[in-house]
Image (tube, rainbow, N blue to C red):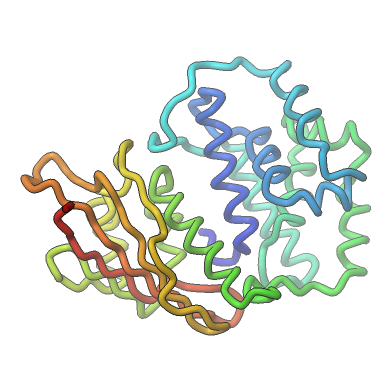
Length: 276
């Protein structure tokens, strides 16, 4: 579903899930998408809302109009409301309308405004934003959103890796499989190889140890950093299942390659280690 989304747009959805969990919402609402957008892309807020620090004011307004419940773990699956699903569909339409190959944060912004009656749309329209005006500005701006474009060669790769690792806590297989290249492989802790199709079918079982509430990770080392290749070693602690008898930690090597427009995971290899 998210293959066309830029890294920034993907992180908007990740942050929206986080916002929903912090407010104890059983669903991801449009206001959570809006907060995720403002958290992720301050430059977009400054461009169309006139200031990059508009998020606190909008958050206050949202909190005054919603029912806040007890926070819950980000590991809990939180579904999108029908309004949010509509936003994601309209974001794709906006990208197509402008002839853009990828769906970015700017397309999500226009889509949020278009879902009339939603809280996010009301807050944005209240601030004078209109879809037509934003489209005009976007049409005048050369569209170049390659996640590889950066003064730091591996910045896009790091963002991809961070999004993937964080996503293991609360994202579904449908969303996470898009991080993997078509020829990707996963080598599990027992040494068994899985191709992309097999990863897709067995995703929850393969990555269950890393979705545990108390599982934590740290990027231990960056083995290679170029414009085309990025290799990192991630150390996982408490990545254990109840069925496992030994108190292992896992060392996960992740290899990413730069595609035409995005970094993709081509290999994940897990090595179990015995804590010293």
